[in-house]
Image (cartoon, rainbow, N blue to C red; front, side, top):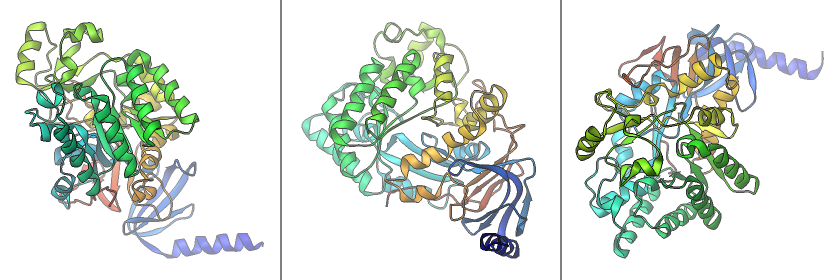
Amino acid sequence: MTRSIVLLLTCGACLSAQTYDVVLANGRVLDPESGLDAVRSVGIQGRRIAAVSATPLRGKIVVDAEGLAIAPGFIDLHSHGQDDENYRYKAHDGVTSALELEIGVAGAAEWYRQREGKARIHFGASSGHVPARMLVMKDTGDFLPRDEAAHRAASPEETLSIIQQVRRGLEDGAVGVGFGIAYVPAAPREEILRLFRLAAEYKAPVFVHMRGEGVIAALQEVIANALITGAALHAVHITSVGGRNTATCLEMIEGARKRGLDITTEMYPYTASATRIESALFDGDWEKRTGNKYGDLQWVATGERLTAETFARYRKTGGAVISHTLPEEALRLGLAHPMVMIASDGRLAGGKGHPRSAGTFARVLGLYSRDRKMLPLMDAIRKMTLMPAQRLETSVPAMRNKGRLRPGADADITVFDPDTVLDKATFENAAQPSTGIRHVLVEGSFVLRDGKLLDGVYPGRAIRTR
């Protein structure tokens, strides 16, 4: 018997002799980092994965995962819903980390403090340009600007205060700088460039919703800013902003990456977007500008399609609206492209919202990977786990232990039935949990077991740079 075989048997015997806190036994392990796709048992000790074994393992808790898939917990880089209502639906959708990185927050230190010890899943946020602008310019909007921050150029003194506010968030550990440029059309290009420079100073990525007019020029702007400053760039929901120009946008990002720029992107798996009706996206003659119509808009509160009359009325009051305007071809291109991650852009409030808030990840696994065969299962898992972890790990070293299934990695794990996993959320009833997600563990603690949420379990921890 050779020395390597002796060592292998000895190692296997050691693994079998140990008693782990939790064992997920005999499931199909899908690890996008190593490419492992095989029946294995996963042993968890404390907060970490301790073993991935082809031989049986002993555990204080043993979960039979035969016939189920075992994957790293899903990482949602674009999740606006940052409260217990949303975290519950995220857990049902297999998400173990949800981050508010596009719009971001003002006052990161307090934002993190409010969630410590109260979150079912991991949480994090960027230091946001939009909320900083709203705070400094005293905008009256709810979540997104509706007056001063959207429609007025900041004074030199206000600009300095906005930059200082964003800097303070980075000092307090925020995960990069968030931009919703489309929502602040009055913000000059120089203001955006200065904040890219600030992000580069802190070696922090920027997460950008580009300008609302002329997507090619908008993407050129942020690519140029990244090149000029050295900031790492993540362009959010590329199929949503790209629309019929999605193929060109993807070619542009690919070209920039080939020339050494650190640029990534994401999408959500729906042909409808959502935003606030009072936002700058609907300023002026938005029909002519976008090519969309009132009847494309669905009022979230009631489910009704809008007319010119109801649009004008709701625009005065403000609220969430869904826009059924995204081409199916853009969705297909994004799902098939190996560079594009999955992120939800979701937010539920009182059970109302876009179905992406509750169903994004199960929809990719069930509808698009299994049923329509648009992408292999391992590719789908990679887009939800390893790729978002890699996007963050340079500035957030803790992410090097997420998005993987290997000894030493964090025990953030999603166990699902590949034959039944599916989204249930609809545009009329968004607050419906996905099915087929059987178990979700956050750093070794079950938050979802046998498809049911556990009460009083809050293992979620802050994802931050410091």
